[in-house]
Image (cartoon, rainbow, N blue to C red; front, side, top):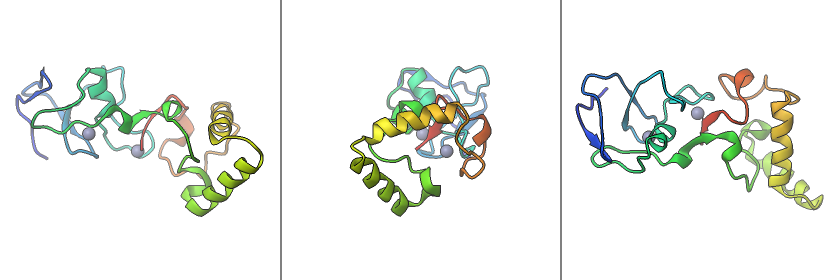
Length: 147
Ligand SMILES: [Zn+2]
Ligand SMILES: [Zn+2]
């Protein structure tokens, strides 16, 4: 793993000897701290993502180091759902399309149904045991997950 030493990222100066995590998406480095308000690892796949960290530092782009946009790693509830979340129907795209057509036939929108699904999810009325997530039991809709 490459070590980023004293690089300046958007005016933010990395600690020279600090531990670093490498973002799974952009391969950029970020400081590995435990006292942050933002998560550095995705609860769904356990991989590190830098989007939430840099946005919490008000850094939107790096100079020589890649920085992910905030959009790549954000709470489930902040995602604008215009179609079915890709985790529904065990990632089966075909079944998602069928569900999407059913929703349209019922005169409802995907946003509407997803909002309902979110509240059921937080109420633990959704079966999580078959979800392709590492920490399905501790995830809520305010948990950060990668795209
Ligand atoms: Zn993930
Ligand atoms: Zn990144």
